Image: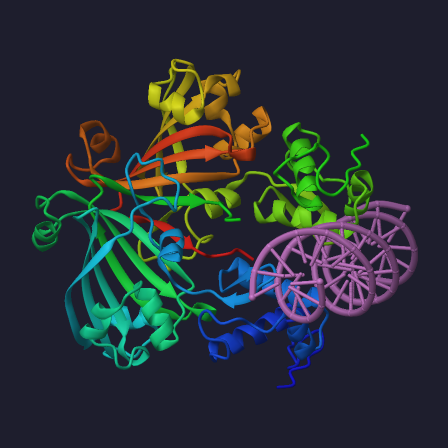
Length: 260
Length: 260
DNA sequence: TTCGATTTGTTCGTATGTATT
DNA sequence: TAATACATACGAACAAATCGA
């Protein structure tokens, strides 16, 4: 429990000389990974944490400042600091970027998608999937296909790939019975906290099966999104390929925007 | 020159009660808008600025912290704080998101585009353009069409719309004679500093003229990007529609990533 | 090359304000 | 009302990087 530290880092870091607040941040992150404070829980007060790490309040606050900027935790004056939970709001603000065309645009006021699971299978990772998820080739994975609708019309076809080892008992029943977002399920049931994602977008032509499911013509233009979702220390936890019908919707990317 | 202030804001702000460091940030932003420190110039030292605003160094630093986060200024230990300039690096990192497919991906190591200007015309804003640029309907605008190539092959067709009033003497000669990025030209010649952009992406089919210029078949899938570029206080300064051939390239969107 | 002045970065401590319970 | 927790603001000391004499 005594994690007192001194500047420069404990281990004889030959080159990686880092400030004290970064070391404090590392220790806080380690405790978060280990589940010392589960999703939604309050962290100890700043005074207590400063005492535990034997640093000043200012140094501790600087460490938490960065965790707040990365949306790992949230602070509320008078209440405390909490492990950020996944919910509809966080999804819409940081992970779901499809908005209705012409609809003002501002994030937040957009419609929430409804999901229908089309298939749920156990399989083995392809070479490319294994490389991207940092698994052995042929490692067991879960493949899940979902059709997402906005205002009742199907707009997005999602193919999700998960490392089976990370989601031990995940079944189609559990997956479809969730009463919150998919990332909320990952977080609360498996302790896997999706913190950010990296996406690559391109334009493609609809093939027969996608066209049928999205109720468009074969050969219609679709937006293809390849996403990798990452957790603490950029550990990959999910691959997802989305095909989006951009006839009535589009992908919003606000760059350099800081939420505050 | 004496801009001493006190907490709570000078004017009797009935509702907008804001902390002192925000007021300091507002004054700094105002000076930046007025050109007190041009692009690339050093700001006075933190000690001097703290004295000028009659606040502590910590409060001043907190104000500058936010300007750094918004990439308005950059700090260098031992050298000073400088007005961020537009250059190839900043372009690649924050405004140009097209990367070669499969090429590792990480921003920074991507290839720099070469631009060829196809047309440069004076015209009047459409109703929609005027609304988005906050101009009168029919206000004079500049329309510029550019073809961008990567590694020698044309990949992107850009249509740019600028409020003519903001770019008084801009001519095709000046535009094409620039020896740096377009945003560097805006910044150094017209004092217009592009700070962030908001983009909307969709998939479309190539029409005849775009197909000819991009050397693809009519009906091939293209990524369409509608961008609005914004300056201080979210003032719109440029509209741009890009058509991207995503056969060999794709759009990179790293979300929740904080550069540090 | 060395040294000193300048500037930002880190860390500490303290006091007070504001929001919540 | 009182206690608790985060937010703001001040000041001081030292470290690290830079630059010019």
